[in-house]
Image (cartoon, rainbow, N blue to C red; front, top):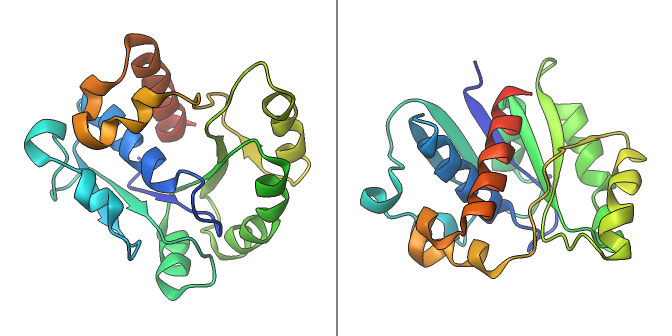
Amino acid sequence: MVEFIAFVNNKGGVGKSTACFLTALGLGRAGREVRIEDLDPQKSLSAWIDGDRDGIGKGGGVTLIDTRPAVDDETVMEAISRADRIVMPCSPSPGDIIGMKGSIDTVNRLKKKDAKVYVLLNRTRPRTRHSKNARGLIEGLGVKVLEIALPDRECIQDIVTDGWKAMDPATQATVLEMTIEIATS
């Protein structure tokens, strides 16, 4: 059973907090109890969560860990070392992908032997060259890419104020598929 899922990348602005929140919302929709550890000094994720609206608590179940934009920080290294799953959100930008190499190396060095590592493509636009080429570039770095990619949709940004109901049904379905893939792969 997956107990800890860490969201990690050395770059800021790639969607760690958003992916963590979406996964929490998806797990909640699937009937799982979710706990969040917000290790990012900005505490964005903590500010976004509305316990009554989102059903995310401090109890047992699956612990999702949102980390700061670093991999050489003590709190991030500790999160990597205890995680069962490590999700590395990344935009399809070639610069973001190439810049992730150091994060991948650190994660592979610090992770538990049986921990799984995945890259989650975030803010994708299916018809663009970068989105089409991203999977191959990432797999060339030696890490698995989740089958589900998060689209570049305003409704995903609106989860900050409106939670699950901010998303249209197609985006909700994508988030549920992503959550299942993260939790069960």
